[in-house]
Image 1: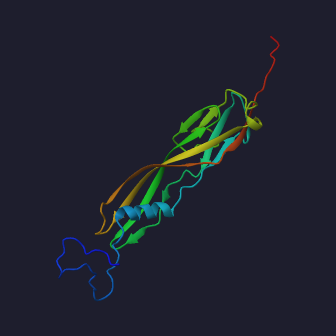
Image 2 (image 1 turned 180 degrees about the vertical axis):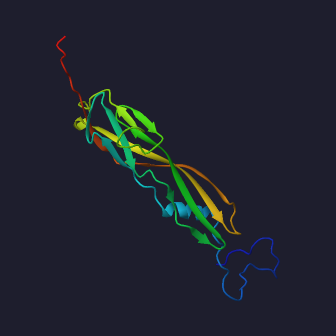
Image 3 (image 1 turned 60 degrees about the vertical axis):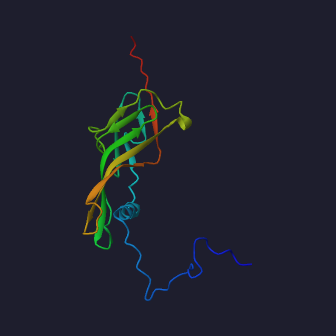
Length: 182
């Protein structure tokens, strides 16, 4: 059984495909936004590595220095298509520390001497699972992109903030009690 004829066509009209000579047309070049996505996907953000001083164990009311590795500018390799080349760049802005008993934001990577980023615990970690705080550091980057070439939809733009969080790092916080004899 044949399907009914299409409505609105006269007997000398029909629906059909028209053959085209030559090769099929080339696919459209990717948009600038698609190239930005490719650039961002090609380069991940480094996972920060947490460091403390004292290392691995500190005490209540003792200044503990905090710092991370991985607080670096991230720049993608250029991605090109047609007459446009896109590159993304991210600059570190801050480190948000989840310290178990408090959250702290530092504007730098911190350092071993603790001048830029430190914390003094108020409570021992004895009541925590395993007797340790599990601390993490989340680096926030401000990401932008640029496009060069005649086919760019825009010369550049802002991608906003991007983050990467460290693996949990155990930190024992002990408590020292003294008797002054008074």
